[in-house]
Length: 331
Ligand SMILES: Nc1ncnc2c1ncn2[C@@H]1O[C@H](COP(=O)(O)OP(=O)(O)OP(=O)(O)O)[C@@H](O)[C@H]1O
Ligand SMILES: [Mg+2]
Image 1 (cartoon, rainbow, N blue to C red):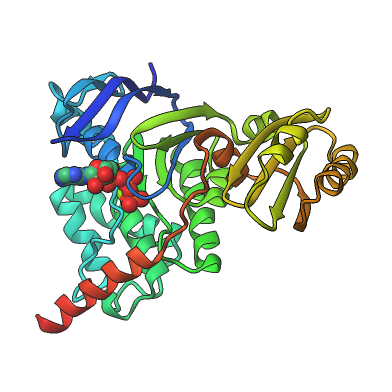
Image 2 (cartoon, rainbow, N blue to C red; image 1 turned 120 degrees about the vertical axis):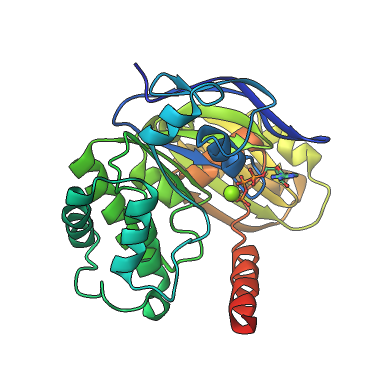
């Protein structure tokens, strides 16, 4: 039996279709990632799978239990770490976990053992008696993740586990996620809008945009399908339709995407293609401002499936954090 099974899952909020006819399965012990920009429908999907939102139509099963009709069993089987951290800053790290353990009805004689084990795993044993208000963003996130593991779930949901964190902290969190996965052998469903995160952590990735799944595959296959090389060209001026139609004819060019004056080519033999691009531009008298040849990344995969770049817009999260800070100051 699969850990997660989605069948034509749809969720509308009035006119907005947040999740649009999604079907997928996540195997036991698999790490599956939902990669998509802001508003793609990632959190909405997670909230349905964790029984916090009702789907408009379709079905979702967790370890065989239906989120609509077996919500209690679903909750017993899952851990959920929300997009925003939920730890209480006036309590210490250990007190936060004790509170979580009580809310999750962990047997009394198990509580301290499990907390010790988890504090060790996320390397917060030394800081456990300090108020969380003194913790860094990364430490709070680690504590949050530990809170989701106390009842030993079979499926762990991580909604944007590293959003708003700096890159070093983000890499540390990836290490903890891998460690947790190895230790507890659970399925993990995570969402992210960071390409590198999906690439580093996931066995398979579903690219989601506008509530729809664009593609599901392993990071390796996605990159392979693009061809070996990506050529990025920036042109001067505006009228380059003739240029586009000519480069489309070049041998070894698999796919072309245009975004304003930026053109991205996916090619199986980039070094053969580049001289031909220069030849066409000089024949048509079109000036190339810059040209580069790189290996495909998941960014490129995203562009090729959705037609646009992922909007790596962290300002929204910083704004949210500012608001949260203001609320705390006012309290
Ligand atoms: N409670 C709600 N009422 C109305 N619209 C909603 C509600 N929750 C989400 N939406 C809308 O559904 C769409 C998907 O939102 P969702 O939060 O699932 O996206 P996301 O992929 O998690 O984005 P982010 O990267 O910003 O967290 C968006 O257009 C959002 O505005
Ligand atoms: Mg979200």
